[in-house]
Image: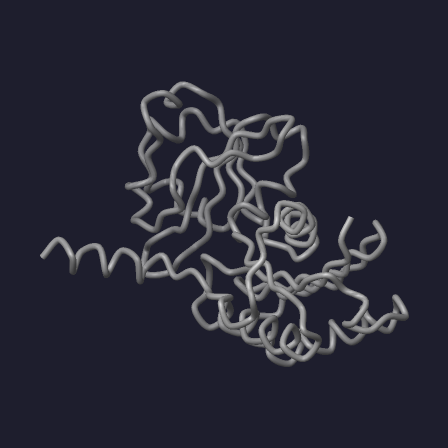
Length: 230
């Protein structure tokens, strides 16, 4: 097992977690627009509590998005700076995957994670949970709530819905919502789940240099796709 520091500032929540020798420490606060003031002190507290320095770590993970543009940049910059200072690799982690990974087993096999993307849109993805981990059933997407649609192969399956994006469920299709077993709109991406996902990524060799660590802005991808189509 690797020693991982994980950071997330992709939503109104700010969190940092330290996975060290199999033990987990975490700080988590919901304070919008305060992430730049909260994040590094959280890191300092975790390292002090564990009695270690960055040199004791194997990698630094961060919530690479989707999420708040400004928030994602904060976590990306902090992860790059800390990793450069300590000569460590970086692990970008999907915020939508982290939400699904942290979900209680009682939520079932199939999960839909969605975040409020503002501008009457949502970031979302669908997941299947198995013995070997999570499998994405669709690509991560940003769209209007009415555009959240599953492939026909999954249309009749019961899903648990997690995240702030489900506040728009009244705007979603009845064909989708009639198969939602439960809604949990107060679920946030958290650094603890990202640390555990990053631990598995490190084992698979899925790390990048600090310079290669990039945020994921799904709106940018949509904009470039439309430009290419033109």
